[in-house]
Length: 293
Image 1 (spheres, one colour):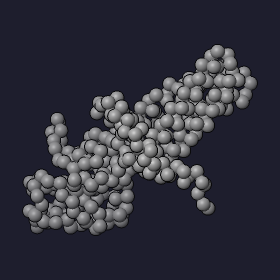
Image 2 (cartoon, rainbow, N blue to C red):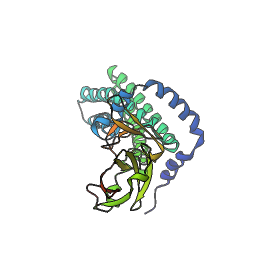
Image 3 (cartoon, rainbow, N blue to C red):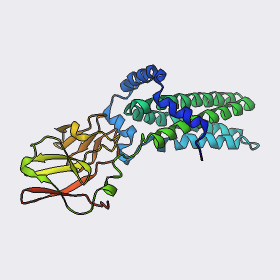
Image 4 (tube, rainbow, N blue to C red):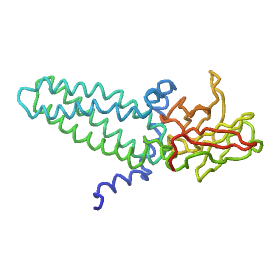
């Protein structure tokens, strides 16, 4: 079965350079609005372990769709207006989470994302007008504006799906590592030949690993950043305020605990696969728990 024609149109947005001025302006504005690292981490979804935005949109979308269904029934004007209001209010944190995620995307993803955002903003505007008209007792125009908002937000939803599934903007890009890496202990290399405290890329069983020697031990993580596949060996090693040794992603600034792989700061929300290590006659061996490749 062939793709529908409009899929090609949506895919073409990825390389449409006419969107770049809007992308640049949005980057400038929202980088200032969401300057707080704590706010960014919360809106990325770091505490819940995956992106917050797809979860946050459920309430406004559900409220708007439910309002449209109630509009088909008699004597539901008050309830329908209430649901439109709920959708408008709950769209605010969903929009904020979306923009924070958008700031840490590739250019091709940002082009689609900015159209996604404009569509959703237009839909919320239509629903706001719908709410006003319903409050004035103009139910017919309120319903029509609501239906228009539902149509526009459906377009925005499709674009969001394209971002998430076609462009993998919210996926864990290191999820496949346990399925590609062999089970059991694997030889990594001689400890004394590893540079002290420097991020080093070493391939084991065809998988790139980040290795950082610290004295007589080596910390080993997957070298592929879980956010958008950046090579972590090109990042930097540092200590945070609590004394935890961290690796910072070179592309979008995600920060991971070097010992555990846990996310310290987003945009990443999934931890890095962490490899157990042991030293046998001066040779470092690694094992990935749960590996079945």
